[in-house]
Image 1 (tube, each protein chain N blue to C red):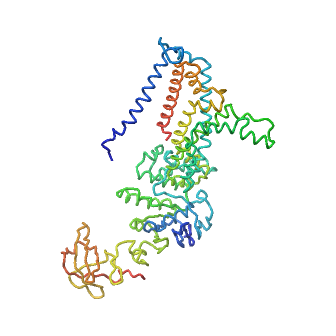
Image 2: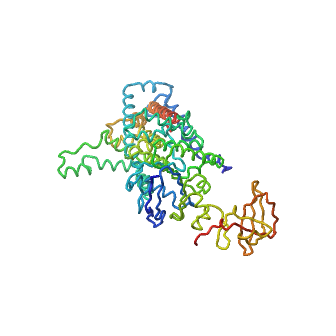
Image 3: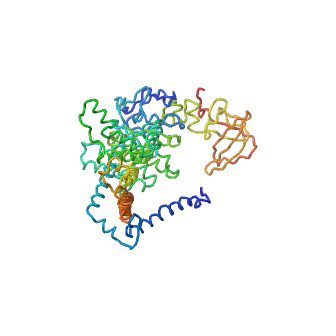
Length: 277
Length: 324
């Protein structure tokens, strides 16, 4: 069915994207090419200094760390999310209940949930108090303010973004294809690795992108659960706009991050075209 | 001949008390082309799924070469299925699809596997297309990949679940004859599921007619078509004129202006319509009692006009008599 007003339906979203995304992106581009103002903000003269500073090994290591944290978090999400998605798709009438449970955390703010983790993990938190009172440990375990806590927070926060796309592709796999594999002599594990996983590749790719990109730019989780000891790209950018008051450099860092993400997405898209699917 | 597959009072009902298969007993001989026919929902596909092991029977048993398959998962049964939609692995090439089952046999050497795949490709005339994906094949080619993928494993019984229904009608007749000659060549027992009575009659050594989960009759195509034991079987396998409790097939029904000779059965009727079908005439008549009777008669015996009074007659040996 062709709607006569199809283009009109596009309009609100197009206006929003145009104003809030493209226009703001141009402003960021412009900022990155200016000098820092005395009290924040930007000023003349024009300068490419923000970009040359990016070559400082200090920032390279922050980028590398951020990629590592995002990659580990994505891998853990996949490791937890794939079996979970598989389980839900095999749950018959309970499917919708389980899906609702996966989405349930979204009902409260991410900030609140991150604080909840702090209450669980800190030295006087629930976990340490429990272990101390049971006499299992004598000193509180350093559960908070390290990379482990950051990765835990990221995995917890973004797991649903991995589960949902994988679930959607598993659901679309023709049941008879799975029966055919068993019929041809494949044991369940073989059917899983040779048939179900390859056929879920689009969902795995989509879920990984959806988890990896926000993890790469995350600043709230590293800030709260890392306690400022774990500077990631997101924190670097945030600092430039707040305490460091270096808006041009902050703009340059965020543009570099965006460029890296886009290159990554292009690589994935090309791989998909080359017949991964 | 040896029995290869035996169903013993096979039954399947579901949690909601819906009965899909009810007490089906059947013995299929080695090398036989056996068809299970019936309308949709009659339980024929469930029967096949019980044999393949996709579902467990609630009662009864399946024996393959005399050994019970009870509790065995599909991958441990030496039967293979050709699915209605073929269920090819979309991410694998034709070769990988055909190899899939052989690769599960870990004791088989690579050289032996290669040879069997090459033979299978040749058998279904797909040599040269082994590196294509299922999406790059025509419907007929996909069906042949599905056949090759199963036959390469040399199963004791090949289960075919309406394998022709996804093909367009022109192709269907051609594939039908190919299927029959393929079965003769490989000598593997075929259990063929269809709702198309013409397909079943033309392909099978024997036919089982199913209705509401039960097996109504088993016999050769001639048996079930000419000597159906129930009215359902008679009606399912072709049109029947039911006249005073006996059935007459349209091709056995004759029409004449004069009363037929001694020993023939005849009733008066009025012509309602006459259709010219090229090779024959399809004549609709109505008896005085109001019942319709159709006849398929030779166009060489002349034509009939609407409203004319005629004698509808038949030979007594062509009558179908089945208990109500």
